[in-house]
Image (cartoon, rainbow, N blue to C red; front, side, top):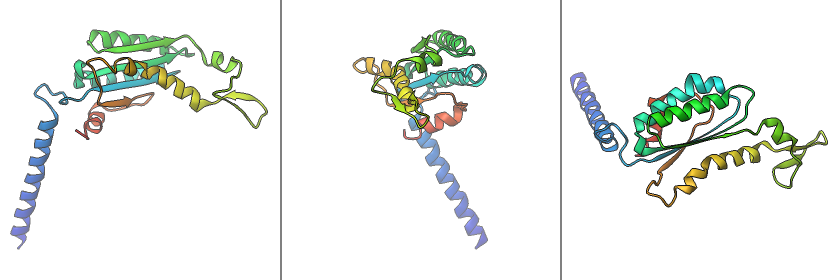
Length: 186
């Protein structure tokens, strides 16, 4: 009886492995890039030079190389920061160019002080309990996100249509794990 149970488990494991290999081969072409998946990668950055230089940029370059330059477009928006986020994003732009990755890197000179010093308008500002009119964070960040997304709309009628949008702001990520999540629905 025990021998029959062990044999059944071995057959079940073999079948699961076989299905996994078949699905992996169907999703990945011979080049190692996911078949027919075009990914639009978006990032908005402010005051995170350290994470960019030490984690984000190397991981993004590895990710785009793994996906293949023909399968990605990287769009990054950065505003003026007290650290050298701008310099890190200039490095990113250079590395993406050297790798042949289509991209748009927008470096805005607007500082946080510039934004909060603007005269309040109807949209995006709120009267706070402190009796002040202050810039609302979510509408402001949504506006930055929309700026970073602009190339998606510009490329809409071109030959490059995207299957997925991947938002990668100031997070540390592992390329292999992220690839498995991105292509899970393949």
